[in-house]
Length: 210
Image 1 (cartoon, helix red, strand yellow):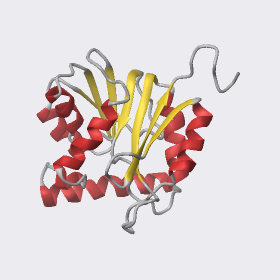
Image 2: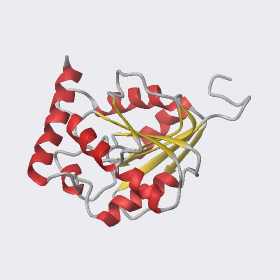
Image 3: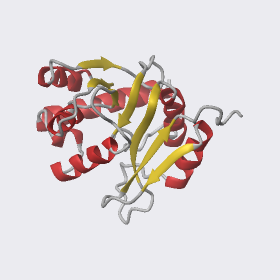
């Protein structure tokens, strides 16, 4: 029941933000456009190219779909989110894309080439443990991505940490990611108080189970 309480809280949080701010970046609490786009650019640098199928976990309003189109990438885009209101606005904005209501902790995650996720797991949970939740989601999602997964997090190295936000220890998540695959990159080099993990499938004949 504890996850159901967290899930309801997350949905309610964004319902209130949509009502207060309308369907824009303020409702998503992602910061200025420049920061939003910088995150997207770093997600793309995992290796996304035209023709790929990309699943965007915690897609919000589908802004990543707009970003890749502006960059000239012709991808097959699937957005996934918990919040029905966000999904409704995303479908209106992007009628050519697919949007799914998915709880990544419990629902089936569709297979794709890449999974990306940005600012999705920044909220400090009240009854669940953030690390346990994200590790469970990573374990469920990663093996659905044929080419890899890119996901960003707030960093524990940040000078200021908002009490409602959760700042992850980059090395702790890196260590967990290495239990899923040997091919992990930790990026903490871009000018935000965040970091990004890239997870790629093991090379053939070189797996964590070998």
